[in-house]
Length: 266
Ligand code: NAD
Image 1 (cartoon, rainbow, N blue to C red):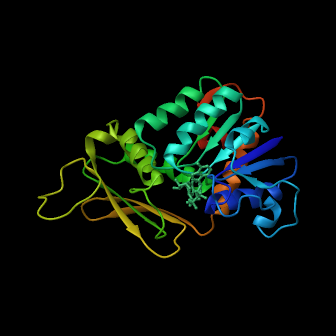
Image 2 (spheres, rainbow, N blue to C red):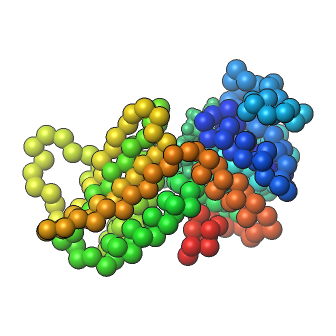
């Protein structure tokens, strides 16, 4: 199977490249970066300190899609929407982990999913997808007087907040309570904001250092508190999930899938 990477020079792009190079049965069809990126022309093997593979980092995403069976995208929301159109036009499966998508950018993915398999997940790790399931279950079990708060911490370079994973956990908690997250989310607090509204799902965002990703869902009741936590200590878990998802798309019908489908957790 031929798998390509857009955003191949980024933190996740390089990790996906390393993972693909170590995976049996797949071939790295190419890597694309934004035109003008300093590493364009560099052999992809050399880019991650491995032996050269005879394929250079390119600035041509369209050619990358044209030569791939599946493409993995960890880039920016704007580029993800453009990549979704390329995937649909060229009949290539898309695995997307880019977070911070606006509604229109999500719609671009959904439109592509009418034509090709699209796997989208704000977090591709097995552990977080289990945490999402547990959060839904606990929220459905506990009465609404347990206050739900979601705390996340990431490295200082992360540009969107709350994290896509924190929002996915919020959706799971809201689903468990049979409410819409949009109706109950409190995404930030500052100043004299008054008492906590009943049924709110609160978010708190921490940024600093090199933290790969930490999420805690707190269920705070009278006299007790339940906390569910996941800590990623290596980006490899996300890259392994993305490669597994790309392999999973082989021969799959068009559709909009999540990691729960890929991991068989539904
Ligand atoms: P990064 O900034 O290191 O990498 C993004 C790369 O995309 C950069 O190298 C950038 O040059 C490239 N890019 C930008 N415009 C481009 C263009 N026109 N063509 C080709 N490449 C282009 O960021 P990162 O830490 O790798 O994260 C990328 C995204 O993945 C973020 O949204 C992040 O939140 C998300 N992420 C998701 C998961 C998950 O499991 N779903 C895990 C980690 C990060």
